Length: 156
Image 1 (cartoon, rainbow, N blue to C red):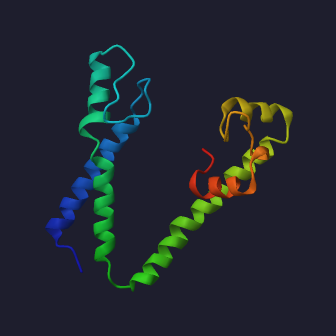
Image 2: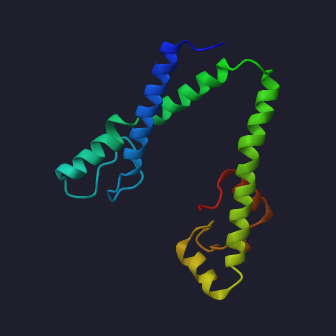
């Protein structure tokens, strides 16, 4: 199915508007970094901090779900291939690179843990801490490595 020119222009406008809003959301730099709808800033409320908080944790919260909606809608319209082929292609394009980069992150941190100076950096940063006493990848059990590799990759 082909989109009409009118609908296509509307999608382009909303995608562009959402991209601008996402850039503004990522520019948020107040002290409370993880925003929930009920969080409040931990700083004095100035006009700048109010504006940042109001837009980032207020009226722009719809942006990411809207981009997912547009993407899903456009993906569902594309009916030239059978569904199984499209899913297989998505797995190759999205899942395979995810797993490869996640493994590369693990390998990099594992190499950092070999040398004493960088091992101390990994320990201090708590980048792969799994409990209060196990701070390194070398302390993981095999199933924890597998779980972390697939679900919670090492931050880059």
